[in-house]
Length: 290
Image (cartoon, rainbow, N blue to C red; front, side, top):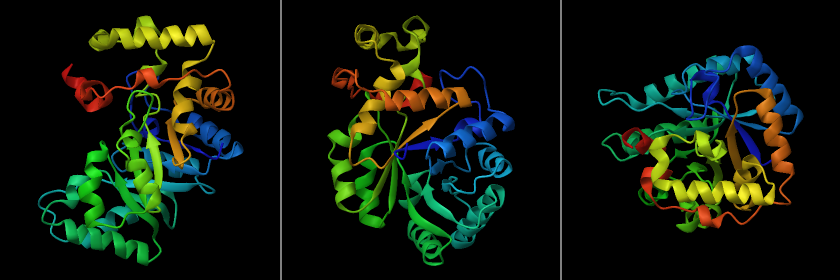
């Protein structure tokens, strides 16, 4: 499953609207990583902001994987940016038990736009030059962020949300632009934080504004005999210009289900009817205000 990457936020935090088990324990993390490696996964996605995720990964052992992590938000009173960046990366490497990173992303792209943006860019470039990091880039919430970013820094890797509901990365033209510039593209939120996988009657009431969308989704799933997993994965996996589709799991059993779904997409229906531009739905940050 070379196109799927493993997201690890659940290893360090109780995360996701559909999460029923909380933070994954170390034993289960080890089982998940073993199954992932056995099935050809080669990229793990984590972040300093993911609670104890890096530390848990280090305890479980991640040799054989390429690690992508993300810097935390730059505090306003930080004066020595180069030192701060290097300290953060060295701390991540210690927690992970690694000597270098495959990818280092900015978790908050606004940090590039402030008065210390150029120092931050230089610090990232220096880490890449020194061989501590192979690729530098950004994690974004909207393709709109890329216009300014790409004018400021030469990036190697972009992580962005992409799913059957949120298709902005493709429809905006940015997926093509990034790939034409040689940028590696990783997508996340294939299951919209688990919302797409929930049974119809279990979808929280605050999402009732989009009832017709959920009705159509579940009707198509039933008629086609397709699992929500397979239907959700089919869209991002089908895009040739997407390099990795990041999925997060709570258990090895769940990862096994994802593996089967990714391999069994013959009956997947056209999901384009699910596309939405409503930011209240496609940006989970706004769910707190529904």
